Length: 201
Length: 334
Image (cartoon, rainbow over all chains, first blue to last red; front, side):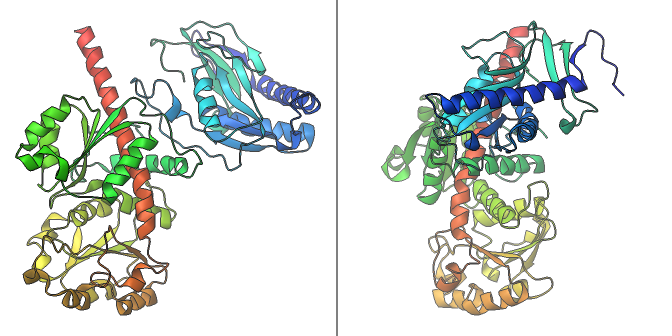
């Protein structure tokens, strides 16, 4: 049963679409890693680790790991990164998310890492995530996988793996709803924000 | 749960809401992870200045706050009493105004006069963290004690200390550590027993704090439910004369955590924890063998102190920024 949408909202990915898109992301990640293992980087696919950016990327990283297990027969390690302390607006006011902590139980040194987030928007979150990740060590490579790229970048950042690209305006909010986060079904919903821009999620 | 403190300063545990205490303790957990990294630094307070005003001698608390500020990437201004113009007769308010002119964002203060941090909060713009004032409070010490207990018992701050019995033994009238703990531990749900010589128990303690008071340490430790943790207070020879404490040996015999008392505690509760805020007087309030026993979490307390103080500085800075922004928005719209 799919819940009715509020006025002005559009559902851009349905439950099955989300599953399919994540499965395709897993294949993309695997393909790229195979190329890189033969190329000059000589990455070791067995050492792949996924790092989800809290909170939106956390569930997604676990999903992607499941899909990668299906594709490669090998489950990559998954870590969760809290970027709150690295945000460029940490002391600029605005609503402050609760600090949840970074949980990365493996050594990132020398590993191919895929950062995972739900929505790529201004690029500021990814900038903060890169700083946070590089403070933990020196990965062999860092790639970026996102479920939705909604454009409107403010920094020179691009994703390596994109589930779906969307044309959006600043007045819109892109919500990724996953069952793990307490939603009835998976979906990506675009709504028009009533307040001004500033609170991403 | 909110992510900012409901108050602008940390002047004491008195008046601290349980939600605020839990927020500090939860936030400290994230900073504990930072402190285990090879690169123990996060950029959260980059460009902010923390003034460390230590009008009274301190080594561990000052180092702990200084390290906390540095691990948050803040700049620190250090000040200690022996080298300051306080010794040249300047008043606290004048010293504060001069430091204020250098625009620190956060001010950590220790002073021998109770209430000094409160006074500074009236004349300075920055957020104040009390690092111990006279015989009043030492809130970050109580928070790190509570944090250490929660970590040892593998509990979250929300679960609190319910069902646990903690005994605090020592000079209850002069100890600011005791005062802050007598407020914080019951706030988190612990049953607290306090014990000390009758000369060191202020009148009316029971009416003010949610604690059971004993003037016989053996009765406090060995009657009723077994004690889960015992916190020994430093005997403050510089504040308490022999008239109130007797000789060192009298005190150790009557009120110290001797090897014999410790053995009896372990018999009643094998996993009992021993805490001490330091610096210890070995052989007076705590036996050397007990201080070095596995049950002693004294060094964990010091370690956790850094994470707890990082949490306090971070949350005070975030709170201050949000209030400034709120004021700016109000000013702009009016």
